[in-house]
Image 1: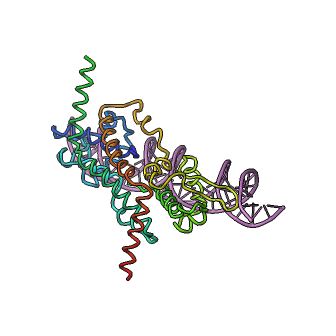
Image 2: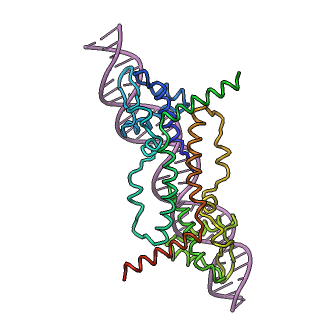
Length: 145
Length: 145
DNA sequence: CGCAAACTCCGATGGAGAACCGGGATATAC
DNA sequence: GTATATCCCGGTTCTCCATCGGAGTTTGCG
């Protein structure tokens, strides 16, 4: 439903890190924000969150920057969303005090839909998205010629 | 992901209308808010939205209230969500000005997940939820005995 | 060593929407 | 005509999103 922009930024930023993954040196916020058109101060926050969740590593100081913490084919889109959207307490607070039977049924439907969406997100890795981007760019090139 | 409370309220309110569907007389906001534990002034707004979308009919004046506009098995959860969440412009504004290839790929994934969730929501009708609620109450009763 | 480049932490801002409350106008059954 | 309901207008509080700015800290390099 809601792409939430935060998640989009996070995925795009990580895709930039994938591009530079084969060479070992870190990528700076400036490079990412320039390539993906993301406000750099905002991106900084998102990268901090991703770092705290262990999806990226950071290197401080001059020539520093960010690196993927794992191989691109071992990071799913679901992980990124969960990390950014802060998913820990939802399932716990899903059963609050006044839980009528009707409420429980509605929540079941929502959880089912949630799982359906998550199974899609968990199916795609960063590598998959990277490959699809490359393929799409090839097609664009062919049209250009 | 986010149940959004608005949608939950709307579905619960409509479930109350289903309960009184076989008898033809309208149900007042007070009754619904009391049964489902929804703040009445807020519920009023939601019912106004549902009325404008043609999901419920209203009868003004004394002995007035709200009625389902259609049979309970002809109203899906997806319709309720779309009505409350105001879904019309998202697909159009999904392709804005600066649309890079990477952005397009990310949007494709999101749309895929969106469709997966929607296929769940569109699968359940109000009648289905009502039946499930009744079945669940039977089970609760058996445990009680 | 010292400086500059880069990340890190903290806080502030404006805007949007969610959730809620109140008052007065209007329509209808009795 | 009055009681009872919806309808419509507005306002408030709160949270979160997206963004910006400054001060502090770590590190590479000359």
